[in-house]
Structure formats: C-alpha cells, structure tokens
Amino acid sequence: MMIWLWDVNRKILRCRDVLDTIERRVSVPALAPSSPLLKACPVKGDCQKDVPEACNISAVNTARAILSPMAESIPAAEINAAAGILLSPSATGAVSSSIAAAGNHSAVSLLSPHAGALFCYYILKLFRAEDTVIHMDKLISSKQNIQHVPESYILPPERRPGKVVIPSSKCIPVIDLHGNTNRQELVQRIMKACQEFGFFELTGHGVPEDLMHDVLKVANEFFQLPSEDKVNFYSDNTWKKCRLHSSIDYDQEKVHFWRDNLRLPCHPLEDLVEEWPNNPARFREVIGNYAIRVRELSLLLLDLIREGLGLASGYFEGDLSETHLMNFNYYPPCPDPSLTLGLPKHSDPNLITILNQGAISGLQVLKDEQWLALVPTPNAFVVNIGHTLQVISNGMLRSGDHRVVTNAYAARATIASFIHPSIDCQIQPANELIIKRCSIPLYKPFPYIEFMRNYIKDTRDGDPVLKRYELSQAQA
Ligand SMILES: O=C(O)CCC(=O)C(=O)O
Ligand SMILES: [Fe+2]
Image 1 (cartoon, rainbow, N blue to C red):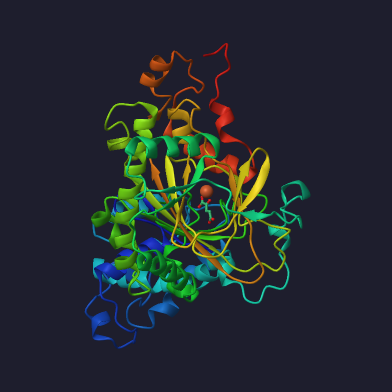
Image 2 (image 1 turned 45 degrees about the vertical axis):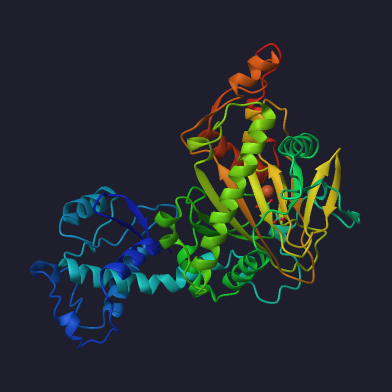
C-alpha cells in the first residue's frame, strides 16, 4: 500500500518525501495521548466529524481507523488515492479538490497546520513500516542467507555469463598521468586507448590512496546499514537523481541484475550534499572530498581528449559537462554467478566515467567480441568513454562495452563517477570535427533527455541504444 499526498503546489509527493519534509518542519515528540504538544494543536472546528478525536486519543489508532477502509477501496494501480493532509492552510482547497477529483471520499482532514503536520506524520509512520518492507525487499543486500539465485534473476541462456572461465589479465592500456611529462604524448596515448578499447587504467592520478580506500569503506558501510536507515533514499523513479534502488529498472525489467545502487548528484556539491546520506557519520565528508577530486580529474581528462580531437579550447566546459553523478554499486555474493550478472553488457551513456573498483574483480570489457576480465590494479582508476563522447567525436572514439559478473565469496563495492551533459543539451557530432575531417555525420542530433529515456529502456532489455541514432550513408 502506498500513500500519496498533494503538497501546496499540487505536486504529488511520495510518503517518504512527505515524512522527510514534516520531520524537518516540526519536531515530533514521542506520541502520548496526553502530550501537551498534541493538546496545543487543536483540531479545527468541524473536522471533528472527519477525524474523530484525531489529536486527543492515540493518533496512530485514529489514522488506522480512518485509512483502513479508504485503503481497501483504492485500486492498487491508482496512485491518486490519498489521505488529505494539510501541510499549510493554503493547501485546503487544493487537497480537497484533488481528492474529490480522484473520486476518493472521506478523510479530508481539516486540521490546523501544526495538527495537520503531526497527524500526517503519524499516518505515514504507520505505513512507512510497510513501505520499508516492500521496497527494501527489492534490494539484494536486504535478503538474508540466499541459497539459490531467485528465478527473477536468472538470465536466458544466451545472456548468461555461464561457467566459461574468462582469463584474467592486465588487458587494457595503462596510462600514468603524472609519469607522462610530455602533454602531446599523453594526449596521443589517451586517444589511442579510447579508439581501440574505449577503456584505460589510470595511475599517477593524484587522488590519495587513503581517500580511494575510505570511499569504498564508507560505501560498504552504507549498504550494510539496517533497512530502516536506508529506506528514506529508496526510490523506483529512474529520474530521481539521489536514490537507492536495485538492478536497473526493477519494476519494468523482465530479469533483475545482481546489484544494489546508490546514486548521488554531486555538482554543485554545496547545493546537493544535504540530500546525501549522513549515516555513516563520515559519509558526506569522505564522499564530498572524493567527488571534488574525481570531478577535477574527469575535466582534466576531457580537456586532454578535446585536444586530441582538435576541438576548440573549453569545448566540454559548461552545459556539456554540467552534471556529475556518482554510482555506488554493491554486488553481494551470489550463490551461482553463472546464472546472473551484476550489470548486463552496456556502455555508459555519458561523456566519461571514472571507476574506483577496489580490489575485487568483476568488471569485464568487450574487445573484438571477446570478454576480457580486468584484474584490479591497486589504487588505479578504470576510465571509460561513454556514448555521448562517441557521438560528439563522430565515432572516432568508442564507448567501451562492459558488464559486471558476480562472485560467490565476497561483496564487491565500486564507485563509478559519471560526467554527463545537462539534460537540456542537444547532442550531435561536433561540427568543427566534421568540417576539419571532411567527414559525414554518423549520428543524428538528439536531445539528451530523450536519449537517456531510451538508454534506460534499451540497457535493461539488452538492445544497443546508439542504433536508434545512427545515420545511414544515404541519410547523412
Ligand atoms: O562496478 C563495476 O565494475 C562497473 C560499474 C558500471 O559499469 C556502471 O556503474 O556503469
Ligand atoms: Fe558502466
């Protein structure tokens, strides 16, 4: 059962979001029928009819009594059922008419703002426990003692990694950022790696070893927290930037993947850090420091690539590299890694990705139709090019296909840092490049927002998203 509310702007809010808002707005005391705070929040006159004694007997029981019949009458598929709760006096009209429009009777509680907030709080508390169970059950890290891979995670035979042993090797180029004093040579090496593999390992990058290590430690600690400490971040909305979820698109996909994921927006940091978890206690500090360092590093690498492509100085600055997201991936041990994948074959959608994969292997890169298993190099980053850079470079650089396999013995945490264009950008092969090389564009222009929509769908279904945007010779 999910409870939905309307806020003063008639935006539909999820239960958790409302709870958070309320927790920020009112300090909620332990509920006691005689609580002076409850007495201090009288129910407004005529609402006694709708919300009998809401605030002077146990509000939880009252909430249950009011909501139970209503909850049963709500068709599961309809989200516009609600408890009408007033978060501010000006919401009265909006809430009442929304509920009336949605055809739901009852329970428009005309409370004073403070009483409304309190009442709302207890109603939601009631349902939060249930919400926690429903959502947190989707996380693999919430499942206890899994002996077998559940059916819904078993891939069809042609998409399974199977039992084939993929030889591990140091298979992608290694680039030492500080060991290369000659900038031109460095640019050439990066370009070659991005053309041939779409991947390289980066050493000498300047991010301190203890920070590389600490971020993974804090990430591991986050995933191991009890469910109730994480549920506030859970969301099935693939567009929500700050969210905890599992697999790729859990409610829409045919088969699930063996990974939990916390995604955080990171730029501009000072505006966003408040949205991040603050448990473990060091989370914001450690991850914040790291986010700044990897963003700087990504922009430096993008600038080297820009130079290699012969694009004007500053080409990737501004909107094109505006969005910085970090993916905290968590792959718990899997009882049979041959049946499932942590992540299916995909290329990243963005410009450039910097991955801190710790010491446990799992990442595989596709080269000449062969999977190569990467052996992690201590304190090195794995860098890869995303679809957007492939398109801007008109196919000169390639986004590297990769996938993640699971293992049966140890949980693996990784942090992937993505630089994306802002969602309003139009993406297309760089004009200067087409002109300079007298080439024809290989991709049609597309709005990044539309591309991302298709990307999520195609990745979960195993389809190549760039196919949609390729131009045939005749069209170009
Ligand atoms: O966890 C890994 O090894 C890779 C993660 C990845 O490919 C991603 O987050 O897009
Ligand atoms: Fe990826």
